[in-house]
Length: 448
Image (cartoon, rainbow, N blue to C red; front, top):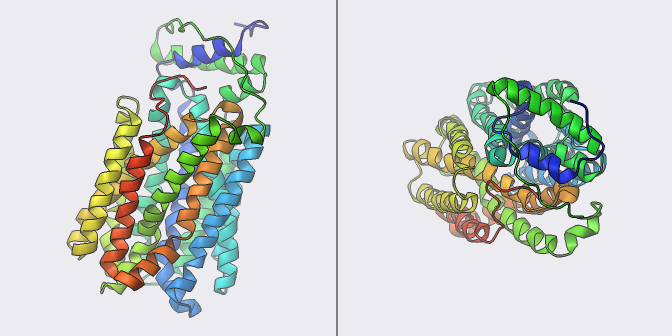
């Protein structure tokens, strides 16, 4: 079938949303997910390297934590810059740039001769990671049929959490035994990221972005291929699409649209939600090995205790895949945030080599479950012309909480001790649960 010159954007979106299966080759989902894998791999590498970096560079824990802070500030900058590129020139271009940036930054991190160099290279790596997360979330929202949006966004993030789960296992072997072990972790992430970047050239553009830019014939040509692929998978014709709503103008994607109603309120709410959540989330992801070491565990015991919990990331993300499109995303995310808070509080009062693997698994399960759902909710709350930038600003502002988690949590620890540090992280879960309830609900609904 040839593309029609008279079809509307709303009709194209309605046709995409009635497809009941993933309408593209499986390698596309795998390549998108693999980029997330190496981005998430890089995020937690610095946490396991931190105790060794302190000794090698002769700096305090508070000083070394600036390597985390710089990476997350870079995350904010890269997320914003690349999302503007994505909204203007397309999601494929920005996805290539993101994976290139975090690969180069991670590779250079392995060459650091002092803390200053490491802080600089972590900034570059962070730029790529921030861009990757914002653009993958946006891309998956815009290529997936509405009833499957949460599921397939969840699968790509599940691949990312596999990176979280793998790092402790590799770190357990490399870091306690080899002085260069932490550098090897960075090299592994860099090489993998570059390979994924090379494989992204054949990915299709995002249909919603093509529609928003008025490139309807390109969008229909893409959709015809997706429909044909889906029919071959199903072995039968696709159902008729629902009647589309009238085409509505939502602007040209100018930056100012995010600061006018209704986007302004959404931006404020979602940015605040991410800020609070990331203080506790990054506190756990990057500071736990150091906190446990201070609490009396050796570095090897600390890493070993966190190896089993790493599997909880994957288990939680897979659970989110199968519930995200069936249950209201806001309610399930809020419930898991409450569980996260209770678990962190329990760790604060009962941390040992026996309890950390058990309670840590529950904690990481909630992270694996909540993150893909919160990213899906964030992407759904912004219109297509500014979706990438809206996700970027919300998630980027949120990462200010992560950027200064070391300063916040270590300050609380100095004032109240080990248990107080974990209670502070626990409180972020309860506040996040409260805020997510005020976000717009779009489970199974058409994107704006």
